Image 1 (cartoon, rainbow, N blue to C red):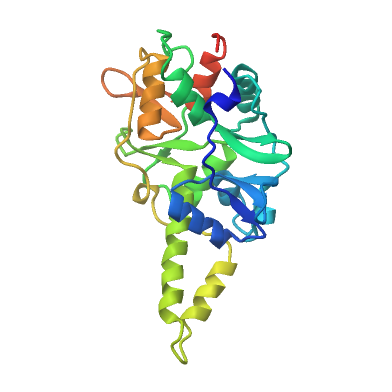
Image 2: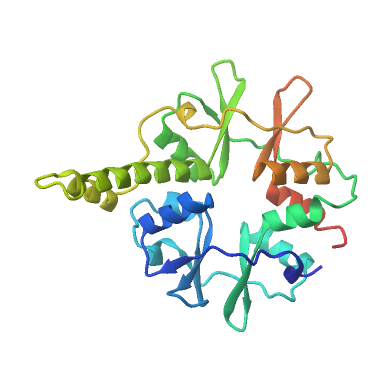
Length: 280
């Protein structure tokens, strides 16, 4: 199977020159958090921007400096089996696809999981591929501290526990971006409401907010965590978990035992590594 067989061709791209606020508009309109970046109204790829860039560069407001420049790419003729190691070894969830120096598609881990692994007939279970190294955070941990712990741990997700060490939620980098986007949207509405009012300072104060760093409020992580956590079992097959990830649009799923205790976590990267040994 080749990249051209499963890549996404209906693309939503960010453009340079552009700003972080314009990026938030794209996030708001599409519910996506990763975009190829093209130059002006051309199809010339100049970068890629993800939720990690947004969270880890809170001071940057210009897209050209926020994005990752000159990203690795794939070609339509590349075999999926050759592309999987590029994704897993580098921690990429997507690769822009280039033809004649133009952007023609985007290959994502989600494409491989939904269009290859989910429909495979393998009975291989996730037991030997899931990780038992789980980042756990107390539900009362202030949001900025939670984000910093995840940054230092190089973790995209954290399981949230209550005082009784019961899992009560999960938080991801995407949650932080969605929170920033919501604040941006609220400020944008304030600005619109204040425009045209003689003597009003609303618009001015809002513009100043947009020039500052993105700052998470000092509220407990339980306030923004996802409370209804989707879980799986260690005996689930790769295809079963792939279908669940696809259906629920998840990057990772906690693994629990018969009593509901967390025993591990299975990520989309783990599914790719597990499947890589099979013929594609």
